[in-house]
Image 1 (tube, one colour):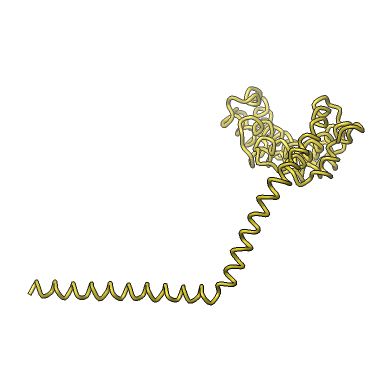
Image 2: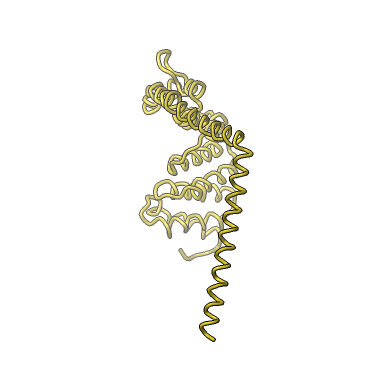
Length: 241
């Protein structure tokens, strides 16, 4: 009886496998028919994809890479002027070398052109051209967390100098929280706290100061934060530091 059941099971399994093979063969046949019917279209699609890939590789090698190298070379002197605090020369050039504005115009699509937005924004901030600085810094984009934080913080500085305290506080908080790191985050937390004090939001200021105390014990801001916490607690009627 058991042997008979085993034979029946074997037959069932065999039939199941045969059905599976038939299904696979049928699927393969349909695929072959589809390819046969559409081989011209598929051929064109493959040709276009390969063509686009080859064009992209050629552009990268023979256009973008040389353009990037040229942009970096042209920006060298503008950076030197920036480092010497000669911000007008850094922005406009000296007649022989390009300034950051020229780099943005000529090489705006390159990494150097993008970085020129940052340098030009900071230069305008130093020169007191706050609205121009904000526009340039908002056009800057970077994967470098520290530089990105500094750009957001610089926008906050520009708004603060214009007396737009709410906007300043917002950008200081963005600089502190969106790209956290051990160096710039405590600096912008402190600035955000000070700005919130000016706005009268002492509770928020206290939270920002306490974040420095708890999370950034090795920062320069940590060494002075107790006095800010104490001052805000007095304003809030709290006496424990």
